[in-house]
Length: 308
Image (tube, rainbow, N blue to C red):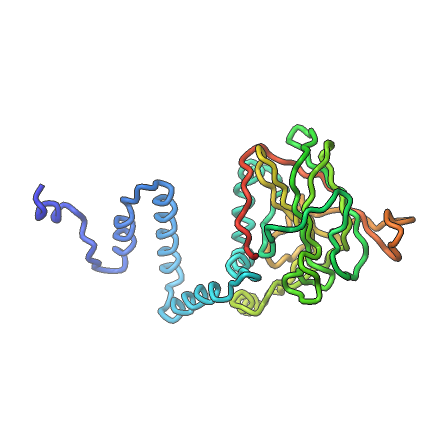
């Protein structure tokens, strides 16, 4: 085929009006050899163009949107991930999580969003040990967790990463008054699939609002608070990595989590202890949490840490 004839048979990418733009862009992307990339990008373009048409996006609004995206990147650093925070604040992280867990959203799941504060190398801690690594106020918490498979059989030798904010509402990487890796620890389940550890009862806290996500929340008259919770990441080859959070059942923001992370299944029973606490040095109120996680068979894959 001559080059002249080939040029005549190819669709033109000269744009006559706005109605033609979408099909021309889709045609330009249609030869990508990666079929999944092609599927995702074609759907993204269709929905993005439809969004602009539906709201009749102005040039000023377009420029504001691009500036917003640019500032999300600029606000991200080794100790703060604004991109993850934005995804969380618009419910996108939770949606993706629920679509990919619990039989692809068909059943209740213990999976939850990772959040922007997981660190890869939290210290290995003996079963029954404490994750309190510097002076931390608050009521003592004694947690007992069990890992089972879908048939209810215990799963041993599961690596479980635990992290939480302090009762002051800050993770240790945000707070110079806390020791590095305070309220973080890594455990392994025993032959009965169990771990236990000591911590402090977590408190709710506001997400960072110094960047563009904070501006968005203020513009929408939304509060920035997350209900109190513990994070867990459960990893073992042969099982799908479980990332989850367990929420304190009496928190005032339980029903209005700013990042939409609370599902009914993730509300824990933080029972106030009676009598003597499990540790002799505990004075005052203390709490006990018991929870059972179910690991689904699948690929064991660790996420990319949002911070270092």
